[in-house]
Image (cartoon, rainbow, N blue to C red):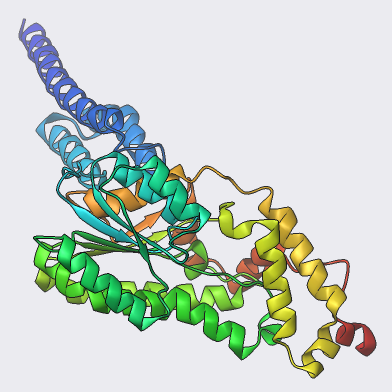
Length: 391
């Protein structure tokens, strides 16, 4: 009889805790589903952790830990996972944002998106009457305003600051330092002139813009979003100048983020992988190839040879065709950095990118070098002239 009573009590406990586990599971699942339905949550590393907790966390805690301790552990796990999921967004209306590099690519697509959700967009274009600017004027609302903006020209930056200051009443909510330039070639065949241009746009351009507009951003307790690249943390043959500039931009962003906390300003960096944007058009690549060649001294031209440079850019064109033209993942990350109630410090824009960046520093250097070489754009079927003569 006592045995039956104990059995009955155990069964009651199991039913009782099963109900509590189910309640926590349903509440957690509904919270995650709401984020997914509002487009604030996408499949990736965080969604994988969520599924692990939902399908494995409950049975493991219920049958291995058991009792109130198991329930407490499971509830804590759900809370921790939920805390690292993307937060809900602030309303976009009555918020202004300045975006650099809106002639094409990420900046152009972002201007279209932010205008469509009600933000006041100042679209900085290198050519304010170019095809990119004209398309924005035709497709966007009257809120969007085109600004002629060369971020290497301090006069144009000052002019943009004067104009934006006259248009915003409570400061500037967001600055997106998106403008960038990329030249391909080995570091030895990258002239100082080309290297300075890449650094001037990708790094010092963002520094100039940020310093100029920080007073307006601090007034609004707003956001700064810097568009870097996966190559800002992973080096790749042939992209040395670009990678150097993006590494420096990441360091600048990290330091600025710490220093702006006391002002209530959030700073994030977005790190896209390779995308086929307007900067990768055949005519633009051809012009960049000529710029690289013309900037070289006679000795470097003799060491590498024109045929080798042509082969490098042929590989770049071939690799570009394989890249995605869907810029949505990057636009979503930048938008989240601007409007999330809890913006993240870093946004990696492709599935698996976060895992790769976490593993990258842990791998032996020889493995990293081997992996980098396997995706290099440098030609394998032809060597620089100097290498051929030395063999």
